[in-house]
Image 1 (cartoon, rainbow, N blue to C red):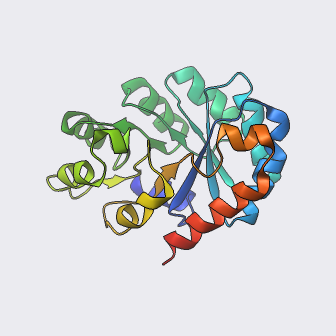
Image 2 (tube, rainbow, N blue to C red):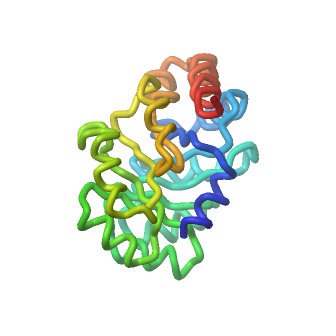
Length: 209
């Protein structure tokens, strides 16, 4: 699945992670992300309107959109029906990974231990989400896991801020970095789409340096 998710992300190394309480804000959010240079985004299944948000963001056309916080087979199916191009989970679940594989959907399971990473690799998932990255130890933890498993690629997510980007992106085991700092609930509540665009542009610029 490494080649699959790499291709789906279109070479982007920044993955905005979005929890959107009000679907009415989705179009403006997609516009701000795209204007900031984002090429992909992850819509978390943490809100009642998540599927509508995903559908609207897909319809915008400027971003490759995946579903995050996917923890059941049913959510995999709903994500695919809404137009998701990939699935991200906070942990490793055999049924979620198996359903993604049955549907031809790239899956990025979350891992926090070497045992979970071994299970993911055995299932054919060579790109995993290190979660929650910063509370687990950040780059030191990532490097400790990568050393015995050089075939693994990581998308660290969780507690990551813009100031952490350069060190993560410099590590060759890191495929991309996921984060919510570019578009927080507070930004959406204030309607501060210019700040979302600015933060996204800064992150994208940092990822290309």
